[in-house]
Amino acid sequence: MEENQLGKSIMRYRKERGLSQEKVAEFMGISRQAVTKWENGVSKPSSDNLIKLAELFEISVGALLGYEEREEAPIEPNITVGKLPWIFIGISAACIVGYLISSTVLDSSNIGTLVCMFVLCVPIQLFLHVYFSHAIHNDSFHGIAGFDDRTEYNLCEVKKMLVQINLHLGIMSTVCVFLLWVVSCIGGGLGWLNGVLLAMYMVNFVVTVGVINYKMADKIYCRDEDKKRAKHGIPITVGCILLLFAGIGVAALLFEMR
Image (tube, rainbow, N blue to C red):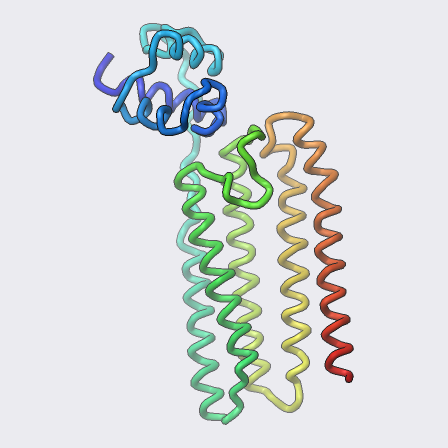
């Protein structure tokens, strides 16, 4: 075999099976770093490990070593988040600058509104975009809520789901930041609209993530039991979060009334 051809073969079959390096390492009883070294050509698996890899990938050892012809599997599409989320982040940042200028000119600055706009743009919109981009680029999803190393996923569909969530939340955050700016410019005792906008944003955030996860459950999970567990758990989780938000809203309303 040519140099590092074995490592490329291991990576190829691993991705075809929708397995992470952690999953392969768990099956083999070794560390993830060892799998990384195999794929990078730093080291080579022993004969026993080659047999285990072939068993895991459901191929022959000869096919893994490249000695046997095998029908080429469809090439996995290169899924990326694209540049559109960055455009929305830029628009949100521009709205914050516009708010600072307009509030100075109109002498209507409100620190609460500014903080809300900043939180929507940076800790939520920017952070999620960077985090999702890193996860998609490195095929590493165990750090994202709801994903763990004990579950088998269809990585291609997981990437598609994260791209969809990232784009939707980016658009939603930008619209909310813009509307907060518009309300502050209008003034006239419409400050209560800010609370309504933020409440709608939080509800939309939770429902969007829940609905997308629910719709994609049949595609992102490999095992039927995982699909059923997700479909039963997601609605309950979304309902509990919405009840929590409702409780916080009622508490805030009572506090303002008193």
